[in-house]
Length: 142
Ligand SMILES: [Zn+2]
Ligand SMILES: [Zn+2]
View 1: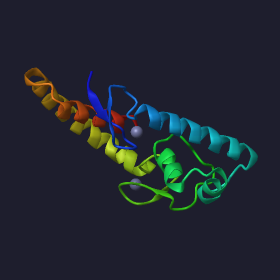
View 2: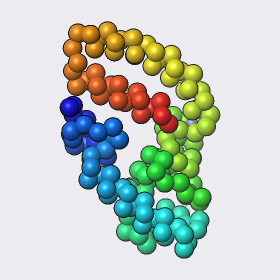
View 3: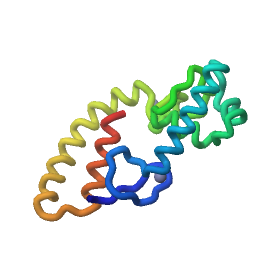
C-alpha cells in the first residue's frame, strides 16, 4: 500500500487509483448530483447561477469542470481557461489545439519518463516515483 496525495484537498490518503481521497470523492459526487438536478430544471445555467442556487461554491464547480466531471452547455466565458494558452474552454484543462499539440509532446516525454522510471524502480520504489508515475497517467488521460 502506498500513499497518494488527494488532488483536491492535498491530504495524503492510502492507496486508491482515483487521485482523490474518499471524502473528496463523496463530496464531489454529491455536488455533481445537485448540479445535474439543477441543470435539468435550468438548462444552460451559468456557473454563477448554479453556485448561487445550489450552494456549491464557484471554486468547486470550476474544479469539477476542469476535472471533466461536469460539462456545462453554457459555461461562462473565461470561467475556465486553457492552462497553456489561456483561451476560454468549456471543460478540462486545455483547449483542443493545445491538446493535439501536446499529445505529440507528451508521447515523447512519457516514453523518456518511463525509461527513467523503470531504471529507478529497479533500485528503489520511493513515493516520489509513484507520484510521478501517477501524475503522468493523469495527464495522459485528459
Ligand atoms: Zn481530498
Ligand atoms: Zn490552449
